[in-house]
Amino acid sequence: MNPVEAWARQFLAVREVDSVSRTYRGDGPPSWRRPWPEVEAELSPARPGHWWPMVRLVDLLDAAGDARLLLDLGSGPGWPAVPLARKLRDVVAVDASELAVSLLEAARSRHDGLGLRIVRGGAARLPFPDATFDAVVMVDLLDVVPDPLAVAGEVRRVLRPGGRFCSHVQNFRYVLGERADLWQWGVTTPGEALACEVHHASLDPPHTLDLRFPLDPRHPSSRALAPLPMRDTDPHTLLAHLERLRPAMCGVVEVYRTTEYVVETAAEPFAQVGLTDLEVRSLDGEECREHAQALTAAGSLPAGPAAFEAAARELLEAMSRADDARGSCLSVRGGKPVG
Ligand SMILES: C[S@@+](CC[C@H](N)C(=O)[O-])C[C@H]1O[C@@H](n2cnc3c(N)ncnc32)[C@H](O)[C@@H]1O
Picture 1 (spheres, protein in one colour):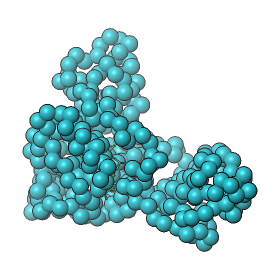
Picture 2 (cartoon, rainbow, N blue to C red; picture 1 turned 90 degrees about the vertical axis):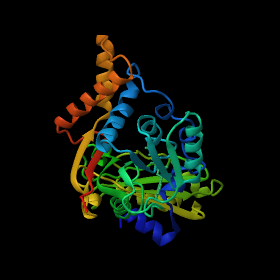
Picture 3 (cartoon, rainbow, N blue to C red; picture 1 turned 45 degrees about the horizontal axis):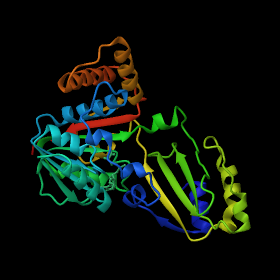
Picture 4 (tube, helix red, strand yellow; picture 1 turned 90 degrees about the horizontal axis):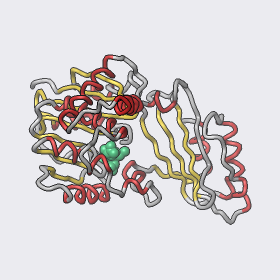
């Protein structure tokens, strides 16, 4: 256990927070509640920001092959379930959050004739019989669940023999740069709560710890609250600062933990449950944008949705050949063996 968490557990009441309440908490980003352009709109090559979702979509579609029935786990407000359902006949979206499910239902109602079934449920215990799906995809789910192995096990169980899966997760090495070990934290919310995020890359597997300390703004000690540099604050400085604030801390500290993957670890949960044929690629959002800008400047953007998809596929292939493990997204794909 790292020293900051140990300190919190020694002096304060601690509650574990799960990814669902964390993602949709009242003070979370309002963007989660607004319709997302990449969910709602036909993606356009003329918008540099659309190349990234298109490349990711193509990656998921390619991994899914000729799937007739596809499962998207942890769909949130509809990514990638809704765009996939525009391309495939039958998609099932699962999310554990009531709010996510209602946002998904609203997104579906804005699209006529979408073959999208929505189920509220937990990915570690899916309400489907064995061997139900031809393909399973998930975007930014595995890194936020407390039990990635259980989720991978369910993926294996619900895939039909020979079925394919694809999982996108954030590349932790990209988040941290090349640092092997980094503490990053901020005390940025004067008032009710003090948020503090601690990355610890040298743990195995690396993880992020996010602690929220409730703070009484009327207590004189709360005046010790001051923004600290977000990077390179060593644990001793951090602990000294927290110690000064401790008298103003009231209520329960929330602890939220995410597993962080790098190219060497991204396939591990799937390998452990016996999925085979595993391949990890790193996809780079920045490269997508630069590529789009270069095409725009040259006046040679692909015309029409089919040409856009083909161009995004070419870019994806070029990225995969580049053998650069530092893109922002790790894509893990593989299959379920026959029998
Ligand atoms: C980081 S968001 C990703 C959402 C979406 N796939 C995207 O890429 O934007 C994680 C989503 O997974 C859902 N989730 C978290 N834990 C889950 C679980 N155990 N089972 C099913 N869904 C879960 C959350 O409610 C949230 O919608």
